Image (tube, rainbow, N blue to C red; front, side, top):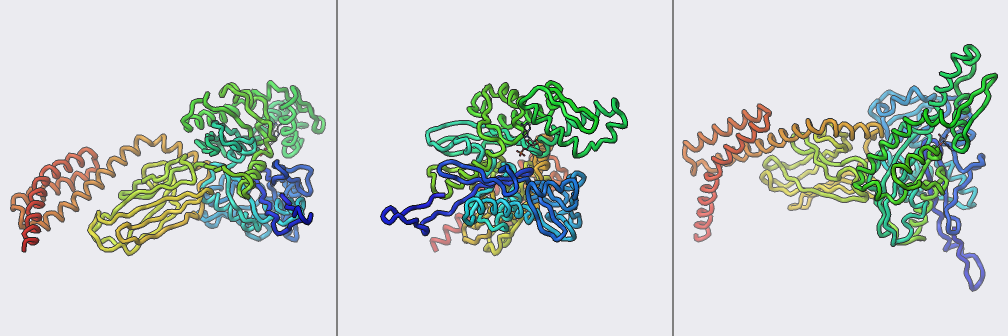
Amino acid sequence: MKIPIDLKTGSIDAKEEKDVIVGIDLGTTNSLVAYISGENPVTIKSNCGQNALTPSVLHFSKDETIIVGDEAKKFLVSDPQNTVFSVKRLMGKSYNDVSKLKSSIGYEIIDEDKEALVKIRVKNKFYSPIELSSEILKSLKKDAENHLKHPITKAVITVPAYFNDAQRQATRDAGKLAGLDVLRIVNEPTAASLAYGIGLSRDVVSNIAVYDLGGGTFDISVLHLEDGVFDVLSTHGDTFLGGDDIDRLIIEHWENKYIPLQGDEAKSLNFGQEIRLAAEEAKIFLSSHDHFLSKIGNLYLDLDKTTFETLILPVIQKTMDSVRLAVKDSGLKTEEIDKVILVGGSSRIPLIKKHLKEFFGITPDDSVNPDEVVALGAAIQADILAGNRKDILLLDVSPLSLGIETVGGLMDTIIPRNSKVPAKAGRQYTTSVDGQANLRISVYQGERDLVQHNRKLGEFILRNIPGMVAGMPKIEVQFIIDADGILTVKARELRSGIESSIDIRSTYGISEEQMALMLLDSIKNAEGDVQRRGILEAVNEANNILQASEKFIKQNEDILSEDEIVMLRNLTVKLEKAVDSSEKDTIHTAITKLNDYSLPLAQRALDVNISKALKGVKV
Ligand code: AMP
């Protein structure tokens, strides 16, 4: 915080005091808040913890008071029904999206309406993930206020780069509910880069890979920096892969090793919480030692580094597959990556660094605490927004393609996947029926060619289009994604100026898992999709031509001979049959025959009509 002093009087000028804007990393496992102290970002310790990390856990006590953080975490085992964790996974999701989580959590997720936004019941009260996240944010806000002795009203909050519109909106709403004006939603890898000071000087051109392995999620992003501008080129990941999986592998190893040997004694152990804690301890210990030994009851648990590394190799290889995909998607060569940044507690594992070094040929940088790096970067972004650092602009990417439904149920992509945001793109459309007054615009997100395989985000109707023949209206549809990744779709009929728009706040979002599946599906089905698109496009074209032919015959009955009309009708019937056959080539052949025959007739009709018009002018 900067406190301006009036140099003449020596008094503190309170009026000019600037608001502190905090940076918040609202994490799945842990959250934290940071601000700029002097020139540097620092994290704020939570009230009850020694640590800056606040576990993203809430506990509801008998009188329904809510506690957050370390104190709440203590109830995970003793009072699971009233202890809520991993709320971030529920943000912007429906019950259907998260039903798989149900077996791994102790609290109750309501399944009455499977399509609507998910609700959580605690002690007969219902909460939305937004409300629950807002409790975590309130707790961070209070910590910051206690520390800074100043009310905090503005914040920058980070989200994973793959968060969709609904999830970003939900995060924003949670901030609002916590009494925070969320000035910006920033992608986590972008914040991490800022924390490394990358992007703070204008003359650096650089490509950065951000490897983020936390407790339960993994993602990798490739960023490009030029002229002080960050550009997220690509993102990949696995939202159900992290330190918890590594802990589970160690537990499995111990169970296999000790249960047969020590029989009942081992079985009688609490192989739940106690062994889970020992596994995490072993994992962390082996980051800096070669051998771990501990005792639970009479049972000695040991693990050496070589065994540990063999156990976790599949997890690391899985992350490296994503790394390869992200680099490929970025369009860069591996050797063009100048810097690799490590984020998330699990990225401390030496074997991960080794694999990254082998792949990129450079040593990954973990000089900024990987638990804090995102929050520190958010604080820097907040400082930029406070106007304290100029010349810096941030760009992120939209993780899935966005488009509208066109005739025949085809997806017309307007903003392709991995486009930089903020983004603005538009396309012109027209009507397909004479005198059409309304046009429905349905907005979809996804990679498949048919909208039925993608996700509908919303729809609206452009009404009162003035009566015109089909094809005459010029309707411009514009997609605008703002810096927070929120989508606005506008439609405008250019001749009349009528317009309509929608802000996308979808009723529920796409799970990250589904998002990954959608990408995979689009690749798997690419061939079939291309074929289907080809047929649908041919059918659309045929239908347009059939309509036009019908109109042409009606309007030019006096110019055309009876034979010509019969021939035209024959050819249109053949085209109709071809459409029914749904065979692309048959349709195209019939289109060509009809076109070839009608072209000279159309030319003749045009000449007659022009000469009629000219005669009219003379009169
Ligand atoms: P985060 O979600 O970023 O807070 O990461 C938390 C995860 O990092 C947990 O699974 C921790 O067990 C793990 N972690 C923290 N320190 C280490 C370490 N030195 N080695 C391996 N894993 C660690």
